[in-house]
Length: 74
Image (cartoon, rainbow, N blue to C red; front, side, top):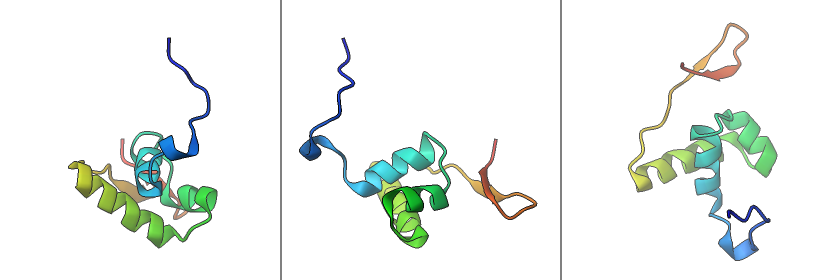
């Protein structure tokens, strides 16, 4: 049985790895991640790119829609 209880603080991944999961798996845009973690969007982007490089992951692509909102490529 999987335990979905809130992990202890020391079990939580470093923020850049959390951001990478939000970006790559949950498909959150950088702006949403930045707002959720109360950090600058550039910090999030740099952290995601660094974490992806660390684990050897190719990041999904992001494009701007007609309203200049970030969306992912299908």
